[in-house]
Image 1 (tube, one colour):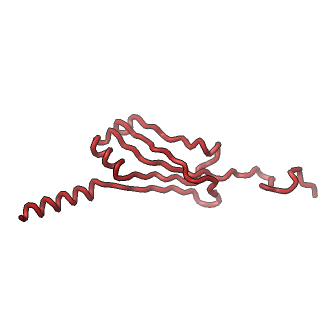
Image 2 (cartoon, helix red, strand yellow):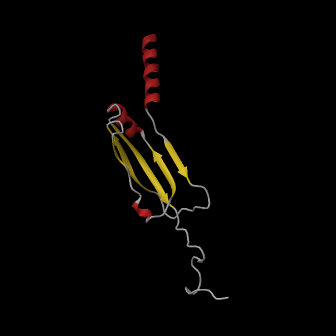
Image 3 (spheres, one colour):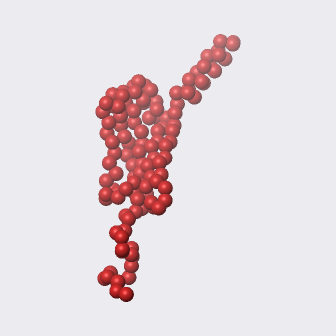
Length: 117
C-alpha cells in the first residue's frame, strides 16, 4: 500500500515539475506609447537552437517596438520535452510604438502650412 502512495507522489511531482507555462513581458518605459494591438507568431527553435525562425514585426512600418511578450504553454513544453529539445516553440507577441513626430511640427495641428508669428 505504501509503495502505491510513493509512486503516486513521485508521479505527481514529475507532472508538476515537467509541465510548464511561462510568460515574459518587456515593456519600454515612457514616453513611448503603444499604437497597435498585439500581433504575434509562433517562433520555432529546432535542433537545440541551431535552426530558428524569428518572427518579423512587419506591421510596425519602421517604428520601434513598445512591448514584447514571450509565452509558452503546456503543449509547447510537452513537445519540447518529448523531442528532447529538438523542437522548441514559443509564442512571441508585440505592440508597435506610435510614430515620433518630427521636431518643430505639431501632430494634428491646424492649417497644415507653416506657422507665422
